[in-house]
Image (cartoon, rainbow, N blue to C red; front, side):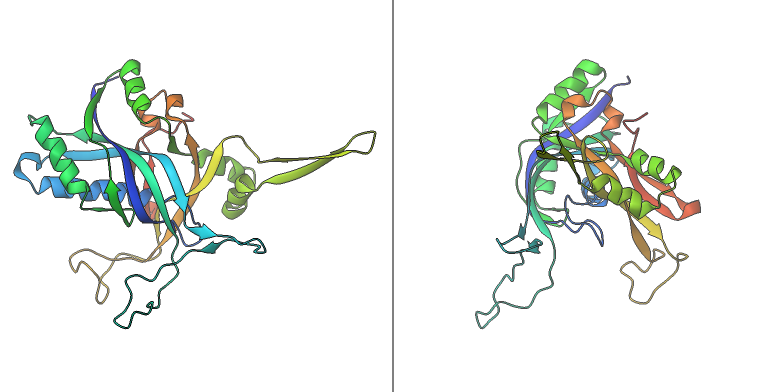
Length: 296
């Protein structure tokens, strides 16, 4: 294994992050949000002369705590989103608001750094802290975090040192292979997704007439739906009032697939936990995908 430098930012507490990861899924923020935050961090670092060539090329996210802001009363059949209307208006009344799913969570980010050059490590880490604490992460506010550190990873032992630092926690990895397998067997995408997320209840009756119920999913593991990118719906072009007048605009839809939360100690290859951007322009796909899926 070649020597690689990982920037570990442990135990970031985030308040009111966006839990609406796609138009039809609520839960852990989308991978586009995490990679987007790392890209924004790189751009702010690059604006400083000493770090203008630093590249934050890949990242992993490890969840330590997750609190989805929903509520279900005793007689309710489904959960409701807990909304807020802050701040109060000039009359002291709550303003109108649009319902949006929020969550409070604690995560660690592991970011691969390239082109660091000859830098003062302490100054670089102080700058990372100063920059990150003022940023939005997944649309939420950063309340606190532990001191970041640079960790060289060059062999299995150094990888274990890294993964031990983010325990206990759950690393999000991609399980697109499950979707592909189901679709090769004839299911369409939404059926394949729901088939792996559904909980199936089975009953068995013994000779004495006693009935035992069991519940299970199609496969083992903490399988979740995750949004990993976008699919362009039209050709790039200019649109009235677009945010950046110099960049072509196109409408797009979310891409949702399956992911799995795994304990970091199970990761034996650094690339099994890292995500990176991938653009498939021929098929109009803008993806966040694993550097090397855990199934390879």
